[in-house]
Image 1 (cartoon, rainbow, N blue to C red):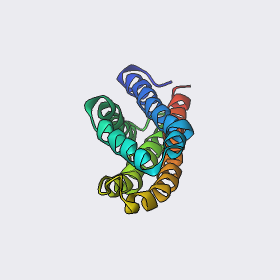
Image 2: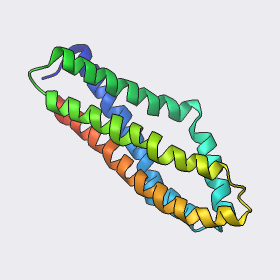
Image 3: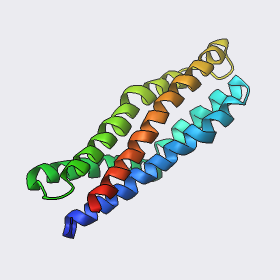
Length: 159
């Protein structure tokens, strides 16, 4: 069984990736649906405000902190190569680093940037809004599953 500081890192990994999975799950299951029920101008304005609020310290500490923690867990796992939990630790780290953090950078952030460039009250924003909702939410489903999978892999590493 994993013990000592390595145990603490792994437990923190479970908590961080699980918290991020919960945030993403909320967006996938009801936030985006609720925004989609609004008229396009209101939906665009609300999502733009959410995107600004998301990059404030409370969420970024959890999101970026979890990415840093997953990277540390991966490096420590490669260096120490523990007798137990190695595969689970590496899978958990990869799921979060690539499926959650990486996907955010290559799929969700570019869509957020595109949305930020639209005035909510224009025909262009109204035309982009359904595309944004569909594509952003699809990628968010994957981020949700990857983050939850990372938390599960870390839990399995502890057993």
